[in-house]
Length: 193
Image (cartoon, rainbow, N blue to C red; front, side, top):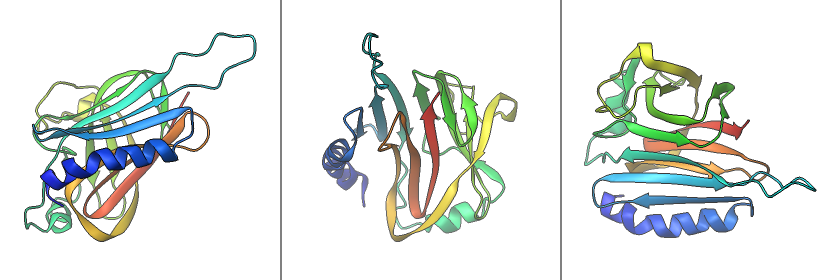
């Protein structure tokens, strides 16, 4: 799928997520002409009787969209096993949460972060970095907040362009961070603390 086709596909995809999501969650995937895309989920905690309605909160990912353009993506990333990948193109992928989260069993306080991935065969790790606003190749291990294992699955049809999604769960303030490119998809569960 080319980036222009991804842009055309994004609104329908976002609508399908919003319709399938519980009333307490809304999600969208947007692709811009700048070559960057974003995925946002807005959640509201359940209302407690006798208490004011809780304020909704957002979690978002903003990333550059690389395209395969004939390259064997899985093969190219496999050549870099054990190395850190910027998880996107150009500027570092930004991850913003308005609440404290549990991501894959690790605590991530509310704030702004950059996302990277360690490419290990069958056992990739998501790296959440405290360093923000940098170019994607400016990774500094000393700035790691956490590294969490990712689930991996092989796609039946390859994704031409990188897609990162925040998928709301069906119960509570929880969901999944999922990214796919080439023939591989990786994911990790998250929940609000």
